Length: 357
Ligand SMILES: *Cc1c(COP(=O)(O)O)cnc(C)c1O
Image 1 (tube, helix red, strand yellow):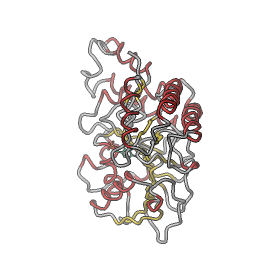
Image 2 (spheres, helix red, strand yellow):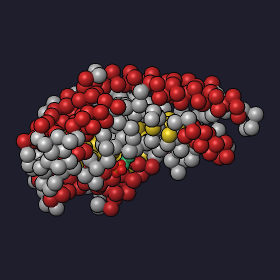
Image 3 (cartoon, helix red, strand yellow):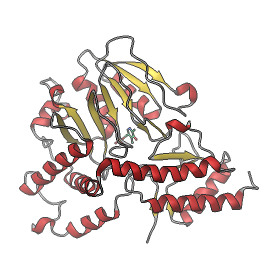
Image 4 (cartoon, helix red, strand yellow):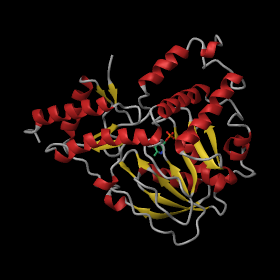
């Protein structure tokens, strides 16, 4: 069965990674055990986690001034864990780009952190990316969501501020090439671009990992010292992430995948720009490479589109419930052929339904 899965997360994996998992499954590296059954204290797993760490730092073009933590609890847990660990004066800034940025703010506040919104595009219904303004006061850092999964926007380059940045890259992790200058933390769940649910990756400047009194599972110093194995880590998810990282390295790294992501998203945006039926509300220079939102402006027609797309093996195109319409997520693993099949179906649907709207 051949389908294209446009889900926002959990999302599709590269076909070759699925094949590798299938091959490895009965007996990982000749051990006679599947990778799901091996001990996290074994040599077999130590090798996996070490390779994943190296691959990730290489792909991000970061030195070993940075530590990689393999954690659980999703990006949502990190909304609070990051400020609890590194916000020395408990006062941070936030760029309000939409739903996930607001969630990051709420969770930090629950942890007793003061959060200043230093820029927001709420007034524009988050259809663009706010220009980041210099904070009025000294802040521990500024939190920025590089790609807004629900609103379909993203930063092409990172803003330069006096304060360091903390980046939620959940939905464009290793999908776009960023220059990480003055960045304290890069974090995200694995289930969108890096594998499967159950793994959250935190890349953090080592000198920020200092002794503190937080409970162990929240405490970066303890987690780092234990090499992310204070308790049982999600072995299978880390193994899968490492296969995805290898795949990305072998195909040429982030510059190459960014090129491909641009080709895919340009194909869809070019169609939308010229369509008489479908529209995309996002300002052109703020459009996401990985999450493309669109609609006909007619709920019934949108529903019909989603149903007929499914019948044509184009799956999970329903938009997020907060914004409605449709959303096509074109993460790293989506091949160009998937974007092409989508555009061909969009064209066909437009021809058949133009009179209706
Ligand atoms: C999906 C998503 C989250 C939430 O991630 P979980 O891993 O489910 O907690 C946070 N931020 C962004 C930008 C997302 O896309």
